[in-house]
Image 1: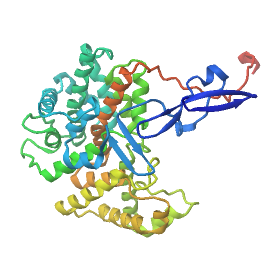
Image 2: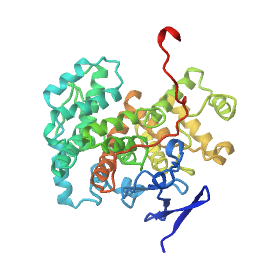
Image 3: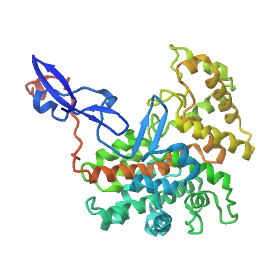
Length: 428
């Protein structure tokens, strides 16, 4: 007999099946709870609620494990490329050479934006945040590709997936060039995915950009690390939107908007803003560590600890090594980076931080690396968007293809006024 969970309400016993995942995770299937009992569950922030079954990413926050399709993140960062990982997330297996060649060639042939779309950037103020531009741009792209919007046509879905992966780096680089007041740089097929993005970002008409393979390597790792993270806020948002059968462009646009928040993808930007605040106040790191330890002080150290990981963030382990290597290679002298290294040392050694598992997380190291590579702070979350795009696509595709998918419609417990009679305005 299958294992069940029993719930007793008003003297009556109800049974609900227990589901077990391939990594021995267990869940109580309460899909029939409301129909059978009239009750719903209350779970603020969905901390104990599973919204779906998924075969894409496995995460164990207690043990610090993160795997894509069964592959350890460390192995993928060491041996793979971002496009290979994108293929893995979307298709379920690492590609053979001919499959990868066909995949990467298709992407390279779709990196150009329609020339009319370039005019879209003209109407935005120079001060516009690139994430607002990116989110609206993805929705706008659906108007340019109306022949590939049907979420139930696999051929159309594949075209949309390729176009998004291909054009997100171009959109990102154009957002940066708009911010800098520099001319847009067209993509070039002679470069690989990461090289092409760096060239579009930093090359100028009067000066060819010299591609540094160590920079390419660290950015490749950053994109892989950000490629997916299970049912996080932005991924769940994309699934939520897609459950209404909205097209892929619109769903990814919603994911970008969710990622923008400072408690999600905007956290690495918050790290640099915190470092700037400490620097403006004289750079006294010990002062701010004391403030962080003081429960009555509203100050919080950004980039330490993680809601899911209760031990060291496995992504941060990888980035710490990359961070040390790239800072040494570039020989960057920056007071903000000096403050960051002092904070890192304290967090790894101080009992207060160690006991509470407040280790530097992925946002702490990614922010430092992006700063060292020359990216402005407002581009940090855009880089996160580039990395997370294949994960969003993979989850949307899994959701659309699942026969179990229903339009997402959470319930609520109403706490407002009970029925009232309308009073005419001259009698109120």
